[in-house]
Length: 75
Length: 137
Image (cartoon, rainbow over all chains, first blue to last red):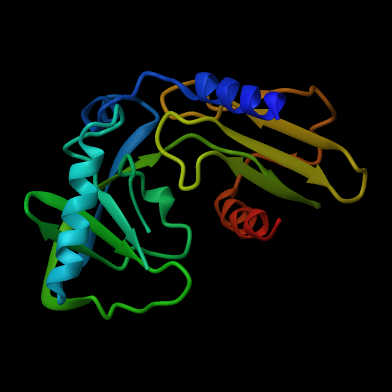
Protein backbone atom coordinates (compact mmCIF):
# COMPACT_ATOMS: atom_id res chain seq x y z
CA UNK A 1 0.00 0.00 0.00
CA UNK A 2 2.83 2.32 0.91
CA UNK A 3 4.53 1.57 -2.40
CA UNK A 4 1.34 2.39 -4.30
CA UNK A 5 0.97 5.72 -2.50
CA UNK A 6 4.64 6.48 -3.07
CA UNK A 7 4.38 5.64 -6.77
CA UNK A 8 1.44 7.99 -7.20
CA UNK A 9 3.36 10.71 -5.40
CA UNK A 10 6.35 10.11 -7.64
CA UNK A 11 4.13 10.28 -10.72
CA UNK A 12 2.63 13.57 -9.60
CA UNK A 13 6.10 15.03 -9.10
CA UNK A 14 7.17 13.69 -12.48
CA UNK A 15 4.12 15.20 -14.14
CA UNK A 16 4.85 18.70 -12.96
CA UNK A 17 5.92 20.98 -15.73
CA UNK A 18 5.86 24.60 -16.74
CA UNK A 19 2.57 25.18 -18.47
CA UNK A 20 2.71 27.27 -21.57
CA UNK A 21 0.10 29.59 -22.94
CA UNK A 22 -1.59 29.24 -26.29
CA UNK A 23 0.16 32.40 -27.45
CA UNK A 24 3.51 30.87 -26.57
CA UNK A 25 2.73 27.70 -28.49
CA UNK A 26 2.04 29.81 -31.57
CA UNK A 27 5.63 31.03 -31.55
CA UNK A 28 7.09 27.54 -31.89
CA UNK A 29 8.35 26.48 -35.29
CA UNK A 30 6.75 23.04 -34.91
CA UNK A 31 3.29 24.56 -34.58
CA UNK A 32 1.13 25.98 -37.33
CA UNK A 33 -2.30 27.54 -37.13
CA UNK A 34 -5.13 25.55 -38.63
CA UNK A 35 -8.40 27.36 -39.20
CA UNK A 36 -11.50 25.20 -39.12
CA UNK A 37 -14.99 26.43 -39.84
CA UNK A 38 -17.42 24.87 -37.41
CA UNK A 39 -21.18 25.19 -37.01
CA UNK A 40 -22.28 27.13 -33.98
CA UNK A 41 -24.25 25.36 -31.29
CA UNK A 42 -26.30 26.77 -28.46
CA UNK A 43 -27.34 25.20 -25.20
CA UNK A 44 -30.88 23.92 -25.15
CA UNK A 45 -31.03 23.15 -21.45
CA UNK A 46 -30.23 25.93 -18.91
CA UNK A 47 -29.07 23.27 -16.50
CA UNK A 48 -26.45 22.17 -18.99
CA UNK A 49 -25.34 25.77 -19.37
CA UNK A 50 -24.84 26.02 -15.61
CA UNK A 51 -22.80 22.82 -15.60
CA UNK A 52 -20.53 24.09 -18.37
CA UNK A 53 -19.88 27.39 -16.61
CA UNK A 54 -19.40 25.64 -13.28
CA UNK A 55 -16.70 23.47 -14.83
CA UNK A 56 -15.00 26.48 -16.43
CA UNK A 57 -14.99 28.34 -13.10
CA UNK A 58 -13.60 25.34 -11.27
CA UNK A 59 -10.68 25.19 -13.72
CA UNK A 60 -9.69 28.81 -13.26
CA UNK A 61 -7.49 28.08 -10.29
CA UNK A 62 -5.55 25.32 -12.07
CA UNK A 63 -1.99 25.92 -13.19
CA UNK A 64 -2.75 24.92 -16.76
CA UNK A 65 -5.69 27.29 -17.12
CA UNK A 66 -5.45 29.58 -20.12
CA UNK A 67 -8.19 32.02 -20.97
CA UNK A 68 -7.58 31.43 -24.67
CA UNK A 69 -7.89 27.66 -24.37
CA UNK A 70 -10.94 25.94 -25.73
CA UNK A 71 -12.95 23.70 -23.47
CA UNK A 72 -13.84 20.49 -25.20
CA UNK A 73 -17.15 18.82 -24.54
CA UNK A 74 -17.27 15.17 -25.41
CA UNK A 75 -20.61 13.53 -25.67
CA UNK B 1 -16.87 14.71 -20.22
CA UNK B 2 -15.11 18.03 -20.38
CA UNK B 3 -11.58 19.20 -20.25
CA UNK B 4 -9.46 22.20 -21.15
CA UNK B 5 -7.07 21.28 -23.91
CA UNK B 6 -4.34 23.41 -25.46
CA UNK B 7 -6.33 23.91 -28.66
CA UNK B 8 -4.55 21.12 -30.48
CA UNK B 9 -6.35 19.88 -33.53
CA UNK B 10 -5.01 16.34 -33.01
CA UNK B 11 -7.17 15.92 -29.95
CA UNK B 12 -10.13 15.04 -32.10
CA UNK B 13 -9.76 11.31 -31.51
CA UNK B 14 -13.14 10.33 -32.83
CA UNK B 15 -13.33 12.32 -36.02
CA UNK B 16 -13.73 15.96 -36.83
CA UNK B 17 -14.96 18.41 -34.27
CA UNK B 18 -18.69 18.75 -34.28
CA UNK B 19 -19.23 22.39 -33.48
CA UNK B 20 -18.37 25.42 -31.41
CA UNK B 21 -20.29 26.92 -28.51
CA UNK B 22 -19.71 30.40 -27.13
CA UNK B 23 -20.90 30.78 -23.58
CA UNK B 24 -20.15 33.62 -21.17
CA UNK B 25 -16.77 34.42 -22.69
CA UNK B 26 -15.67 30.79 -22.94
CA UNK B 27 -15.27 28.84 -26.16
CA UNK B 28 -16.45 25.26 -26.01
CA UNK B 29 -15.58 22.79 -28.74
CA UNK B 30 -18.05 19.95 -29.09
CA UNK B 31 -17.15 16.62 -30.56
CA UNK B 32 -18.73 13.19 -30.38
CA UNK B 33 -17.23 10.59 -28.12
CA UNK B 34 -19.05 7.29 -28.30
CA UNK B 35 -21.98 8.20 -30.51
CA UNK B 36 -23.38 11.52 -31.57
CA UNK B 37 -26.15 12.64 -29.28
CA UNK B 38 -26.51 16.38 -29.12
CA UNK B 39 -29.78 16.61 -27.26
CA UNK B 40 -28.39 19.26 -24.94
CA UNK B 41 -27.32 21.45 -27.86
CA UNK B 42 -28.90 22.73 -31.02
CA UNK B 43 -27.37 24.25 -34.12
CA UNK B 44 -27.96 27.95 -34.69
CA UNK B 45 -27.28 27.70 -38.42
CA UNK B 46 -24.26 29.99 -38.29
CA UNK B 47 -20.65 28.92 -38.72
CA UNK B 48 -17.46 30.30 -37.22
CA UNK B 49 -13.81 29.94 -38.12
CA UNK B 50 -11.94 28.53 -35.13
CA UNK B 51 -8.17 28.50 -34.82
CA UNK B 52 -6.43 25.32 -33.73
CA UNK B 53 -2.79 24.53 -33.18
CA UNK B 54 -1.38 21.81 -35.38
CA UNK B 55 1.91 20.04 -34.90
CA UNK B 56 4.18 19.97 -37.94
CA UNK B 57 6.63 17.43 -36.56
CA UNK B 58 6.53 13.85 -37.74
CA UNK B 59 5.67 11.14 -35.30
CA UNK B 60 6.29 7.46 -35.63
CA UNK B 61 4.01 4.62 -36.55
CA UNK B 62 4.23 0.84 -36.57
CA UNK B 63 4.29 -1.26 -39.74
CA UNK B 64 3.60 -4.71 -38.32
CA UNK B 65 2.77 -4.06 -34.77
CA UNK B 66 0.62 -2.25 -32.34
CA UNK B 67 1.03 1.07 -30.66
CA UNK B 68 -0.12 1.52 -27.10
CA UNK B 69 -0.59 4.97 -25.76
CA UNK B 70 -0.73 5.52 -22.03
CA UNK B 71 -1.31 8.74 -20.20
CA UNK B 72 -2.32 9.94 -16.82
CA UNK B 73 -4.71 11.35 -15.86
CA UNK B 74 -7.49 10.59 -18.29
CA UNK B 75 -8.27 12.89 -20.00
CA UNK B 76 -4.73 14.14 -19.98
CA UNK B 77 -3.88 17.80 -19.80
CA UNK B 78 -1.02 19.77 -21.21
CA UNK B 79 2.21 19.08 -19.39
CA UNK B 80 1.29 15.69 -18.03
CA UNK B 81 3.51 12.78 -18.85
CA UNK B 82 2.49 10.31 -21.49
CA UNK B 83 4.04 7.03 -22.45
CA UNK B 84 3.97 5.45 -25.88
CA UNK B 85 4.73 1.76 -26.19
CA UNK B 86 5.24 0.27 -29.63
CA UNK B 87 5.17 -3.50 -29.98
CA UNK B 88 6.12 -5.48 -33.08
CA UNK B 89 3.95 -8.57 -33.51
CA UNK B 90 6.48 -10.47 -35.61
CA UNK B 91 9.69 -10.00 -33.70
CA UNK B 92 8.32 -9.30 -30.25
CA UNK B 93 10.44 -6.18 -30.04
CA UNK B 94 8.94 -3.42 -27.96
CA UNK B 95 9.97 0.17 -27.74
CA UNK B 96 8.79 2.57 -25.09
CA UNK B 97 8.91 6.30 -25.36
CA UNK B 98 8.04 8.71 -22.62
CA UNK B 99 8.25 12.38 -21.79
CA UNK B 100 5.95 13.07 -24.68
CA UNK B 101 5.02 16.50 -23.46
CA UNK B 102 4.07 19.52 -25.47
CA UNK B 103 6.74 22.12 -25.42
CA UNK B 104 9.28 19.61 -24.19
CA UNK B 105 11.34 17.00 -25.97
CA UNK B 106 8.82 15.13 -28.07
CA UNK B 107 9.98 11.54 -27.77
CA UNK B 108 12.82 10.17 -25.71
CA UNK B 109 13.51 6.47 -26.17
CA UNK B 110 13.78 4.40 -23.02
CA UNK B 111 15.10 1.34 -24.80
CA UNK B 112 17.45 1.55 -27.74
CA UNK B 113 16.42 -1.44 -29.86
CA UNK B 114 16.11 -2.17 -33.54
CA UNK B 115 13.70 0.42 -34.86
CA UNK B 116 13.92 -0.55 -38.54
CA UNK B 117 10.36 -1.88 -38.44
CA UNK B 118 9.06 1.50 -37.48
CA UNK B 119 7.90 4.15 -39.88
CA UNK B 120 7.97 7.82 -39.09
CA UNK B 121 5.16 8.83 -41.40
CA UNK B 122 1.42 8.58 -41.22
CA UNK B 123 1.10 8.08 -37.53
CA UNK B 124 -2.23 9.77 -36.93
CA UNK B 125 -4.50 6.77 -37.68
CA UNK B 126 -2.35 4.57 -35.46
CA UNK B 127 -2.66 7.03 -32.63
CA UNK B 128 -6.41 6.93 -32.93
CA UNK B 129 -6.41 3.14 -33.02
CA UNK B 130 -4.05 2.92 -30.09
CA UNK B 131 -6.33 5.15 -28.10
CA UNK B 132 -9.18 2.71 -28.60
CA UNK B 133 -7.02 -0.29 -27.80
CA UNK B 134 -5.70 1.13 -24.60
CA UNK B 135 -9.22 1.92 -23.47
CA UNK B 136 -10.05 -1.79 -23.67
CA UNK B 137 -6.75 -2.78 -22.07
